[in-house]
Length: 168
Image (tube, rainbow, N blue to C red; front, side, top):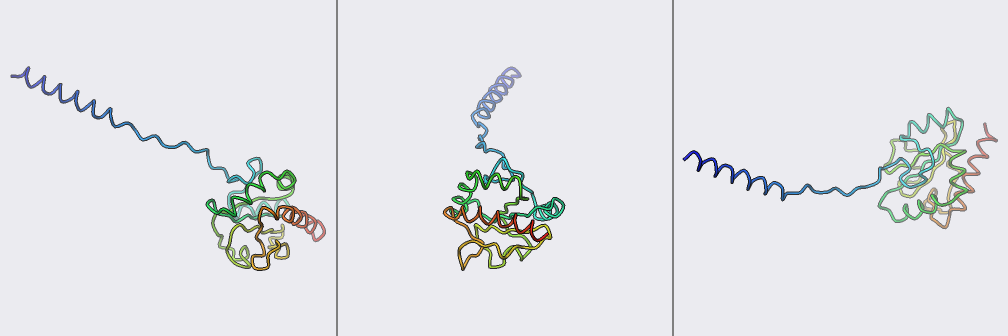
């Protein structure tokens, strides 16, 4: 009788082991690690928080460029692609600006002077003053840029650099 119970036990263990083997672990889709650039320029140094960006702008005496966008917004995606592939903008951003891109709003209402929309690019000088005078071409969304406006964005980046040098 003991032999019979042992053989039944052994069969049950073998059967349960084979069922456990059938439940293969679910493979998770591998995604590249999320960088602070979020695709806006992987070679550039991006700050992590608005507070860090303000500190670095003041201590390095460089203007801050804040890009508000959403990952699933087609307008943001289109501007991101053009921005990341524009050599002049990437070079200027690397050499002359503190960079921050945000997918959420900050508590600082000065970063949304005419509303919360995306994509929106705002410049802050090293005295921590939002440059409300450096705008895009739209009257109803002053800080919005589209892919066709990339030349204007480059020009505004130059303006932010020149104002910095002439005013400080």
